Structures are given as structure tokens and as C-alpha cells.
Image (cartoon, rainbow, N blue to C red; front, side):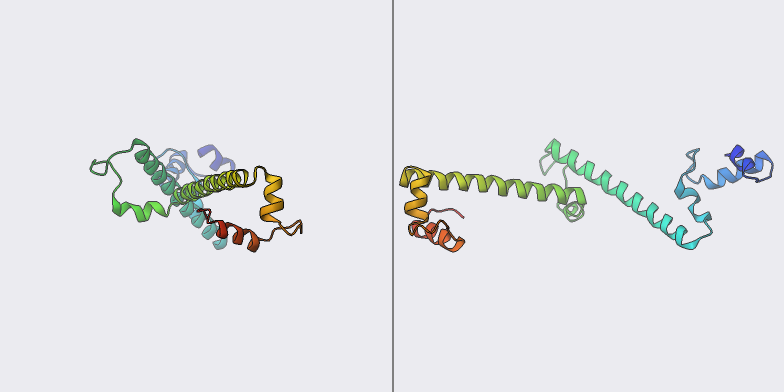
Length: 167
């Protein structure tokens, strides 16, 4: 930092430059980050953008920490009575975390796909049981008028008529 300041033409005693560094290093990390010096930018638009970016970075880091904590606690499977278990009042905050919401959506989609496969297998078994094979099921059950098409309405009517018992 001292060498960089001197190289940029800031002429002062090394002790004074060291003091400037210590003032900028508010966190005491012995390193400067963009967040530490962005308030010095002369362009207000750039300064405001850097400040907003720093706030979002801190928020994102906090969300990631909460998500990891939530996933760790869930993986350990503590009973509700355990002192480390998630509490009901934490749910509104945790459910709004982007990673948790994404995980819930993926689980919903996976359950839907599994249900679709199950329904397809049930329907296929019904066709084989009723008609012997898929070709005969198409000709006699799904397309008895030989139009080479089966509309959604006709298909749903076929399923309702037989009361197959699935969605």
C-alpha cells in the first residue's frame, strides 16, 4: 500500500501513509477490499453502484450462511424437541431463501415426474390387459373411427368412461 501510494505520486511520510491504511482498514483484516475504499470514488453514480453491490454481496453471503445452516440441521434430522432443531418461527425466513425455494421446486417437479411415469405405466397396463397390445388398443379403443388422431377431449372422455382412477 505504501509503495503503491508513493508510486501514484502521493508524497508523504511512510508512517502517515500507514495511518491512512489503518483508517481505511476498518475491519482490521490487514487488507483492503473494494467495500473499504468505494466511498472515496468521486463519481456519485459509480459510488452508489459500488455501495449497492457491496450490500448485495453481504446479503448474499448471509443467505448462503442461513441456507447451509438450514441444510445441515435438516440433514442431521433432529427431532422437534431437540434444542438444535429448526423452530416453526424460523420457517418464514428460511422458506424465502432462494436456494431453499429452488430445492422445494425441484422436489415438486421430481414428484410430478414420478407420478407421470406411474400414471403412464398404469395406463399402458390397462391397454395391454384390455386389448392385448398397443396397436389393437389404438384401433379399437382410442381411434375406433380410424381418423389417425385422438384429441385431448376424446382421450379424457375415454379415461372417464372406463373410470381408470388416476389423474
